[in-house]
Length: 61
Image (cartoon, rainbow, N blue to C red; front, side, top):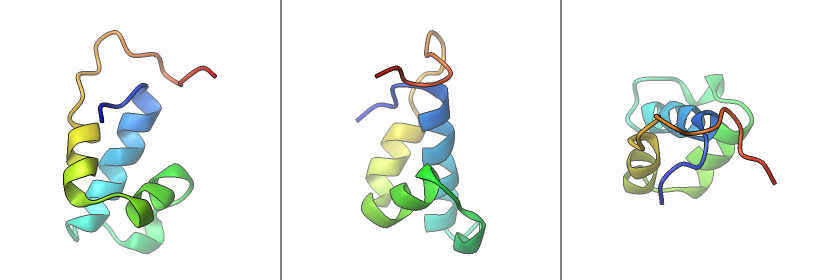
């Protein structure tokens, strides 16, 4: 599932970093903490590797 915004991609990257042990889980907050708990490493990698060009900063409802 590709990221729909730059903010979503950044949150996925932070959660992925924690999954891999590069960042402490206690440093996560908000969406990245939820993603860490609910998504697999493969799902996070897929979302974090989305092309940023043309993405909005935040997803609109």
